[in-house]
Amino acid sequence: MIASLRGTLLDRRDDGCVVEAGGVGYEVLLSSASALRLPPVGGEVRLLIVESVAMYGGGTSLYGFLTLEEKQVYLVLRENVPGAGAKKALELLDKAAKSLPNFRRAVVDKDPKSLVTGFGFTLKTAEKLVAALQGKMESLSVSAGPGETAPSMAFEEAVAGLVALGYRESAARQAAQSARDVLGSAANAQDVLRESLRHLAGRS
Image (cartoon, rainbow, N blue to C red):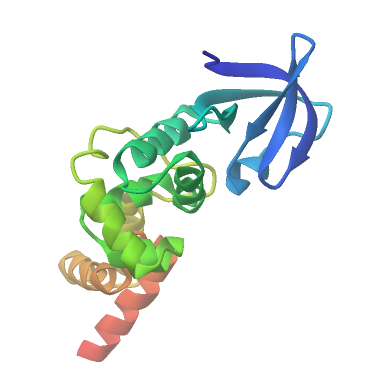
């Protein structure tokens, strides 16, 4: 079983790449989010691999991931979401990869609205994910990637911004919570702050 590949990137596409390792070129399927983060052709790349054998005597496909977190979330999706085979799980991961911490939080908080507004899932799919993944995501440790803000950090940053504008902390926290109830737990700090100000303006 192939657990990882390290080698030269020979080709890259929106949905995968070819990696040469030990003189052999391996075709690897990727989420579009991962494909965008590949180095230029000719550069070195390391991918974590999940093998998938097609039913009824089909061949083996390799699915690649740039981080252990992405691989873990992919496996949780593939193994627990009804009807999600290897390719479908990769499609789901592609949307979840916008922010794995926020995706995890939305599932744990049973907040399908955040999966719709923050990740682009349909409401039907979002509700399916929340139901299927209860008890499956809590043990995963996912951290914010470059440019991401984890939900708790977004909330605290919004509160700090309101306090800096002269609001009492108690009022700021109440407004930020109301804003997050409207926007969902995947909202970033700027959106929470903006909605909090609308809430406070409506009360004045």
